[in-house]
Amino acid sequence: MQNNIEKILESHPLIPVVTIHKEEEIKQLYEHLSSQGISCVEITLRTDFAWEAIALFKSEYKDSFKVGVGTITSVEHIKRCVELEVDFMVSPGLCPALKENFEKSGIPFLPGVSTPSEIMSAMELGWRYLKFFPAHLFGGAKALKTYSNVFKEVIFCPTGGINAENYQTFLDLPNVMSLGGSWLVK
Image: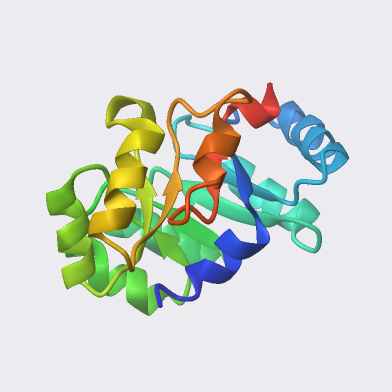
């Protein structure tokens, strides 16, 4: 399902979400995360350097790190991910128009949702592993606890507003397998 995204989530309960601005940040990031026992990263497409950073991180550390791409919002982004042979893709929202390209890519993917209607739309598409974003704006752990009663077959990876003080509350929920956050790199 979703090109085996569950294997990424099972193996990596904490996924750092990072924004890279320049090449010098890559080695520092790798060393910092490795020292914490983390071997997975989601690099966002929020800078002009993002694609180059993804290619460099992937070429340098592909044997020891899973490299994902965040902020996937277009077919062009998916095609670029295929070219770079990234390990997973994350979208901030649910976009049924990307369904075919996500599935054909062969790359594990995680679409974003926040409302019951979006969750139901994802389920209709056959997707049950979803990013809950932005978690802090849409009810956080309380919302996910409620969703566990309503959407029993859905597994979430929440991001947005998660930090060192509250992450365990999320991980303790039965419908959360993994979570993402930028606090892991600070």
